[in-house]
Length: 254
Image (cartoon, rainbow, N blue to C red):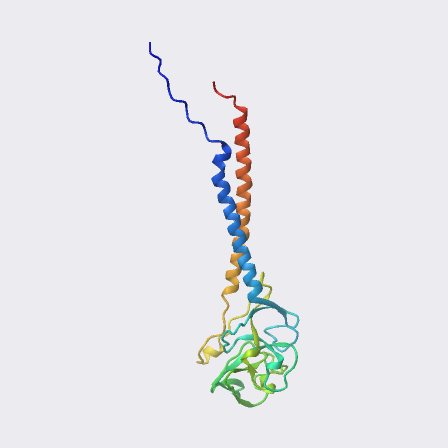
């Protein structure tokens, strides 16, 4: 009788070898999470700065000692209605040390005047400004033509603000940042949208920052990605170790 011989069964892959692809996936997820989080943090650090409002000149929009989130200007275009941080020395006359927070009410070529029916006007168009302190809309009469390379600024507290009405226009190079929110970069509260200028028929809406919310999501995604990868890595290694122990406990087949 002829004996039939069969080829030996292929060796089973070890539990450690089977787990390596999942380990690599989890490590890659952790690396991506760290990268995304660092990207968001670096962009926030480079592009934004914290500031504390020190005076009442922007009341009621901003209160003294209120924390502000300021996006660095970096030569960005300035619009009517923007709340900006300026260097005190950038005023045409009577400059002062330090910085101030003010609102842009006129850009190069504009004629800013007061008052038309107790309202500030720009290029002959009266503004309805719900953000200013009531009772000081028509504090005194003036008319100013804004030169090239400058802006005309006023505080929202028109009765307590030493601004362009007294010190002249501000050099654009003196604008260091845009106030985009109160609070912190982690818990920002965006400033109310201003439509006074566009409602009056003037072009160009104020600056609206969409980068800050996006960067916060980069950071959140990075944290979630890292911890998801870390948790998955631990689970994978624990399961692999369990399979190895189980395989070692099974006696070899003769």
